[in-house]
Image (tube, rainbow, N blue to C red; front, side, top):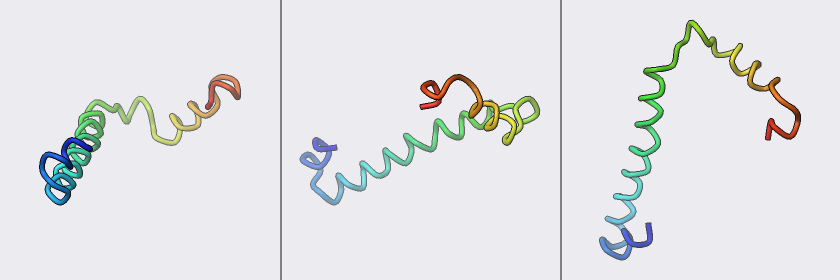
Length: 60
């Protein structure tokens, strides 16, 4: 981020960073949602199952 700010200036560097962060966060989310099997892992059941697994130390 610092290099982008120094290379392209504060305004253009900021816009490039925000664009990259947006793509970098949303692209894996949408790819993962394509492979998420909703029939096998219903949303509420999977969250409850994950919350109850392991000991208290493992849940952190």
